[in-house]
Image 1 (cartoon, rainbow, N blue to C red):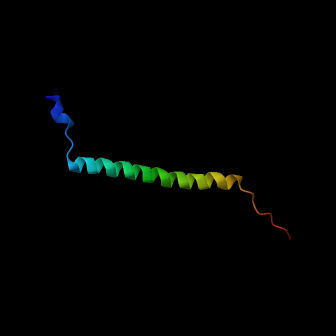
Image 2: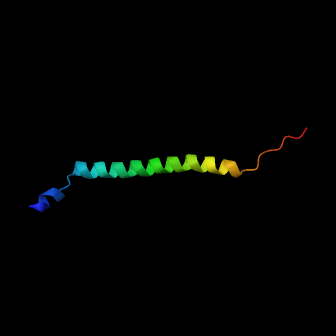
Length: 50
């Protein structure tokens, strides 16, 4: 009786794969933005010489 709940058709598998790939892509973009913001604080600022 419980084995009927474990069935995944092709559409369900595709949806799961798309969700995982989208999540990984979202995390990668967020990490890139925050990495730039973090490293910009530690970069040497160009000094203005007159």
